[in-house]
Structure formats: C-alpha cells, structure tokens
Image (cartoon, rainbow, N blue to C red; front, side, top):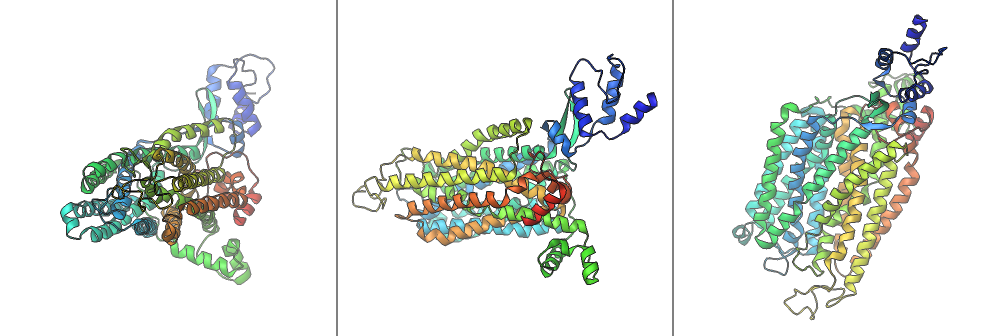
Length: 600
C-alpha cells in the first residue's frame, strides 16, 4: 500500500485531481486529502500532508490551473522598483519640458499669455508635432543598437546624456538676453534634436529594460496562505507596468510647478527644474547599476528576420512556407533559420499589427500638449496658466490607476476575461468620448462673447487683445479625465503587449515599432495642423472623435479572437516566459490558436 501511494504521489496530477486536493486542503477533514481511496475517514498526519504538498508544488502551471485557481501577482524585485524610480525622474523631465512649449513657441514676448518666439498657433503646433514625430522615429535607431550591440542599460545611459545636453541648451537659449540676440529659434531646433534622441532612446529601451528586471520563467502553481494559487507572470508584468505608469503620472505633475515658474518668473527658470531632474535620473541609473538585471544583446537577428519575411513573401505570403521542412520538401533548399524562429517572427508580427492600430489613439493623446492648451488660452482662466489644466490628466491617472488595477484583480479572482484587446478597445472608446466633449466645449466657446469664433481677434476684446471668451476653463477638465482613463487602458496594455509578444532578441525593436506608430500619428498631426486654428476647431475635434470611434469598432472586429487565445499564443509562439495578457482563462485549442494568429 505504501509503494502504491508513493507511486501515485510522484505522478503528474490531472486538473480534476488538483481541484479535489485543493478542496481537501481547505477542510478540517482530510479523508480525501489524496486521490487514493481509503477505507476510513481518519485524518492523516500533518507530516504526510506537508510531504504531499512538497511533491506537488511549486510546479509549472497548465491551462486547467487557470480555471481552477485564482491568479496572484508575484513579489516584485528591488531592481524593478529601482528602475521605476529612476524612470520617474526622466518622466518628470519629459513632461516638464513639453508643458510650456506651446506657449514658448506660439506667443510673443510681453503678450497676453506667456511666450517667447511668437510663431503662432499653427506653426507652434507643427513644430510640436515635429518633435513628437522625431522622438518616435529615433527609437528604432536605439533599439537596433540596444538589441545587437550595447544592451539596454548602456544604451539608456547614452540616451540620457543626450537628454541632459538638450536641457542645458534650452535653459541657455531661453534667457532674456539670449532671446534678444535671436538665439531662441536656433536653440529650440538644437533642443528638439537632442531631446528627441534622448526621449527616443528611453521609449525604445526603458520598458524592455524594466520587464527584464522580473527575470525569466512562466506561470507556476504554489501553496500560499493555505490555498493553491497560480503565481501569474502576466499579472506581475501588468502590475509592474501599471506601477511605472502611476509613477509616470506622478512625475507628469511637474507641469504644475513649471507652468507657475513660467507664468511668474520666466522660461529659463521653469526649464532649470527638469534639467536638474534628468541629472538625478542619470545618477540613479548609475547608482543602482550593480542591482539591475542586464541582459547581453543577442546579436543582430534583423537580417535573418528580413530574409525569413522575404522567403515567406515569395511563398504566397505564408510564414509556414518559410519553415525549413517546407523549403526542403518543395524547393530542395536549406535555410539558416529554425521553425521556432519563424514562430517568434509570427508572434512579433501579431504584436506589431495590434500596436499599429493605436495610430489615432496616439494622435488624440498628443492634443493635450498643443491644441487643448490653445483652447484653454481662449477661455476664462482666472489665475490659472493656460497650460496648467493638462496636469489634471496626471491627477486623474493617479486616482484611477490603482482603481483600475484593483478592478483587474477582482476580475482575475472571479476568472472574468478582460484581455488586452478588450482593454485597448475601451481605451479607444474613452479617447473618442474625450474628443467629442472637446468639440462640445469648442462649440460653446464659439457661441460665447466677446469674440465668438475668432477669440482675441475682434474689436470687443478691447483691452489690448487680452479678453478671452466668457467660458470657464474648468469646463475643460473632463476632457483630461476621459483621456486619463483611455491612457491607463491604452498605454499600459500596449507596454505589456509589446514586451510579452516580442521575440527575446527583438524586444526593443518591437517597442520601437510601437513608437513608430506614434510617429506616424505625429505625421498625421503635422498634415492637419494648418487647419488647427479658429474657427475650424469644432470640426477638427469632431473628426478626431469620429475617427477614434470607427477605429474602436474595426479594431474589436478584426482582433477580438486574440483575447481568447492569448495564453495559447504565448505557449505556441515561443513560450510564455514573458507573460501575456495576464488575464486570460481558457481559450481555444492549439490548432485554432495558430490559425487565428495567422489570420491576425
């Protein structure tokens, strides 16, 4: 009998047996605490139960475990928190720099609103979009360097050095004496170039670097607190990204002191604060350097990936036809890649297709840094600077971020599916609602005096062009709250998806592709910027809302099946060690998931 029991305990348990055992662990009577029939209901000794637990746990999770047990977040290592802290100071700098840019470029010195260069709204918006475009194009350069040569940590330090140099140039050329000598515009050009390099490097490398701090490994089943749970890597990755995004939004409140410095003192004083912040970020990255997980670059796989895609294109655009077995059987050709490499490419392409759908989403988010600032400038401000209301987006993210993370935990506890595709669809809906509301506010502005559809440009604005239309800026605040909820659902999910679905050797490249999508959005913003002026703004906001609504419907229609196969996609297309959606339960079988991934 003892031999039989020992043999049974060493077998890999079925999901049904595990469910039975979990129930037994939570009851005082342990007559059925093993799957071995017994003839009497006596409770086995505690040592026997502990011995059995040691044999079963921890172990790798299977699909059936996701049905049977709640998913929990693993302990987050110190290295991840250290990276989040250093990254928070970089985000303080980023938001601190761009918050006053619209005023700095649009308005002239000594005008109704703070200003320096006097380029006008259309030109200022165009330059702002040019900065965003360049900062979204440069990540690909740093991604290639990071993944093939230097690794993410060293590449980040180079990018942060460029960042610091750009900040120093901006401080120096925004001093009154430098502006008098015409250094403002050239200094702005140099600043945009250097800061675009620095922020582009961070966009490409920081999120993969942060994900690296979790180490490797997949979901596992453990006993915690007397119950069986699944320690989910996907949920842990999600929690880390949410924590980083929460710190990001705390850092975004840098716009509050910086806009007040701009309003009451001057631009160079306001830009000095983010310059100090980026210096602190660099110091923290160096100080915590020995604690970080620094993965070595895996070599340049981009040429091999390109050859694989070309081979697939020559074979009826099917990736399966690029596999070695197919090439050998149909063409007598030996290729330099494996089946697993082809599947990694497939997984990366799925991520890129999903991420590219965020184009209109990125375009709408960028409105808070240019056109919404200009909109606030035409409203009754009281003592508020017109570029301060955008800070309410950060405040809303700080409030709603933990609430939404708590909602994820509740859904996971009750095994309710809310995968990345559903979360991105919700992001699109909230962003569309924000632009619809902005269009309504703009219509209200145009319907109010003294200058109606041409603010500051009528005789009724008699005090030197300083009389705004009589609509309170506080009515604009809901725009930022709606955008904040959209950001939480959208940005965090995009971070997770890009990291989890990217091949190990191409994580920075896939992350850079997500920034390239944002770059295309800035290009669209530049194309429509000539129309971004009064009295056209109602139409512009309404068009953005409509485009976002159409995108939400189309996105859900084309990608909705990916949520059901998210875990299978991770397992079949390169393993699940990097997590996944983190909220997936069940799903379709293997062949179905492969078919759906290929269709996507």
